[in-house]
Length: 248
Length: 351
Image (cartoon, rainbow over all chains, first blue to last red; front, side):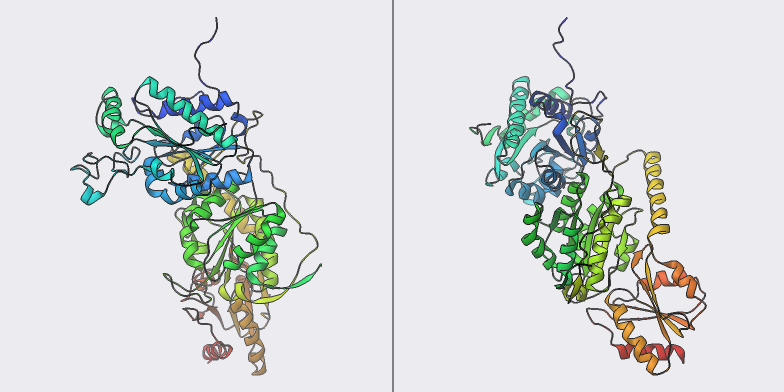
C-alpha cells in the first residue's frame, strides 16, 4: 500500500510540547515539509528563539543553534557568514522579534542577510503566560493589559511585515495565517518561496504567520481560529508585501 | 622571529587575530578601541574573511555566538560600556561552551565614564559580568608585543577548552605604538569541532548548540561539567611574570601598563636602597595564586597598584590568605599614578 501521509523527515520523531490548539506544531511541520521538498536538510541550520518554541532545536533534524531572546537574526548572521552555502533560518515569536529583538531583525533585513525568518505572530507572550506583546490588538486583554490594550497608554499594534518591506535588503515579505486549510496551504507556498529566495542568494526573506494561542487568549481552539480570522486579520492583512514576482 | 613593525596596540590585536586564523570579526565603534575594527575592515577581505559593523554591541556578540556555533575562529572587541552590553551573549556562550575571543580595551567608568585608560572592569572580567556560574580566561598584556602574542594564544586557549577568552588592556595599551616582532608562522591549536553547526550533510545525527537546560538536574550536571573544565583551566593556564622578588622589602602586584610603571619604580627605589619586587599576573583568571604563596614570606608587605578603586587586591588578599598585610594604591577616572606617588606609598608602608 502506498504511504499517502507521513512525518516529514526534517522533523524528529518526538512529541511536541505545545498546548492543544496551538498552531506552532503546524508551522513546524510546514517548515519541515519545505526542507524535505527542497532536499536541503543536510545543509540547513536553524536558529531557535526564546519563547514557546525555545527548544525546537530538539524537533528539527537539521543542525540547530539556540539563541538569546530576540538575537536570532544576529546569531543567524554569524552562522550564515561562516557557511554561505548553507540554508539558515530563524524561527521567532512576536515578543522575540517585534519587541526585544527589533534592532536585530531590522538590521539583518537591512543588510540583506541571506537568511529566512519564520515569524509567529499570536498577539501575545505565550511562554511567560500571556503578557501584552507589541502585536497585541487594541482592547485585547492580557495579564499586563488587564483592562485591554489602550493606545494612549500602551501604544499600537506593530505591523512588522509592512515595516520590514520598506527595507531594500528585505526581498521577500509575506504574511500568512493558520486559521484554515486554504491559508495553511498558502503559508506553505510562502515558506517554500522564502527558502528558495535565500537559496537564490537574493537577500533577506520573512514569512509572518498569524498563529493561535488558545491557552493565553482564554478561548477554545476552534474559537481561536475564528479570532485570528475576525480580529487579527483586519489589523494584520494577509498577502505578499514584497517579492511576489521574484523568480526562484 | 620574523619582521619587526611599529604598530598601535589596537592594530596589533587585529593583525595577531588574522595570523591566528580568525576570519570573522563583529564589532561596534567605541573609543579607545575602534582601530581594531578599522584594521579588520581594511584587511579582512584579503583573507577572504568577514567583517561586520554590527548594529549594536549586543548584536556583535551574538554574531560571535553564531559564528562560533558554526565552528569558526571569531572575535569581537570593545571598550568598557560596550563590554557591559555584550554580557548577555557572553553568559550564553559560556554556557554553550563556545570558543571565541573578546577584547576589552578598558576605559574609565562607571557609566559612560571617560575615554582614558582604566582597569575598573577587573571584577566584571574575572568574577563574571554576566549571570550565572561561569568563568572565562582573562589575559592581561602590558606591551604591544605581548598584546600580539597573547591574542594568538587567546584563540588557542579558546579552542583548547571550548571557552571564551578575554583580553583586557587599558586605553593606553590600545593607543600606544611600539615595535612588534611577528613570528613567521604561528602555532595554532587544531581543535576538533565535530560539535559545531555546519549542516548534517545527512551523514550524522543533528548537532545543536544550546544554553538552556530546563530540567534542574540536567542543568546542575551541565554546571558541574563546566566547573570541572574551569578547574582544569586553573591547573594549566595561570601565567605570571615575577620580577625582582627574591629579597624585596615590598612586593607590588600590578598588571597591564601599570606593571611598566612599577618597573621604573623598582629602579628609582633601588637608588634609595629600597628593594621592590613585582608580581605581574598575565592571566587575571585563573589568578596566579601560587606566585603569591611562593613569595608570601619575603617582603614586609604587599602593595596592589591599579587603575581602579581596588579590585585585583581582593584576589591578592585571597592568595596571601592573611600571611602579610596588603596595601593599596590606585587612581581612577583615567588618571594614572606617577612613579613618585607609588614610591612615596612604598616608603609609607616601610615606615
